[in-house]
Image (tube, rainbow, N blue to C red; front, side, top):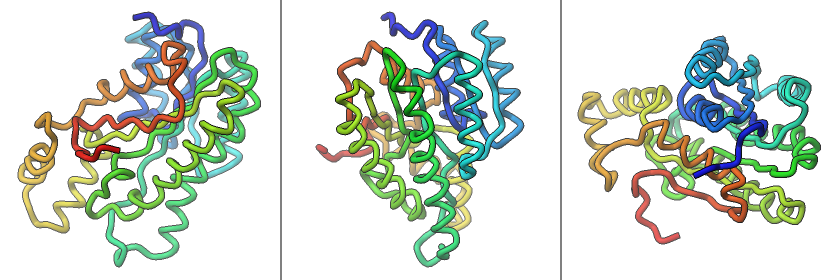
Length: 262
């Protein structure tokens, strides 16, 4: 299937590893011009790997999405480099694990800035450029925890719901301008972030790593965690002109973990 992404400009945030990196790689594989950002210096290595594997030039920028000036710089640099912006994928490293009693107010405020306000700011700065595109799309990466809370993740369970509310609202407000806004709700996908969450669970439960992984896999109807490239395939399709009538969707990519009907 031709996703009609050749020459489109896609900006993927938090793409030095994990889901973001896999998504950027898939965009490049489909012929898109790709810009990526992350706080870590690993972003340059990620860009080099994607370019080597796909032959597509990738623009890499170090930036902290909790800093408005960094967000503005990333958007401006992308537009200056490629002449416009067609696709924005918002993403950020997840807030720390913990229960309500574990988490102080300062940590809550930092998590709101990281998870919600980074998305708000990215979209605010990107919108003038997306409005100039012939096939604009916004994708927010959230979590399956917005459908089914995950133990020991009170911050993610709470704040990512606000991103879903924003996504759904924007799909209504921007739809009249033909700007599609969707979200993917990934379940357990084996990334560095999931390694961190598993280690946090071990610290609380005292179980072995193997036991925690088995517990997660057993809960998933497909019997295993997802792979980053499986997530990326769906993300890139949703952002592509091939999905031109898909708007306001909160799509679970979780192997069937959430058994709810809505």
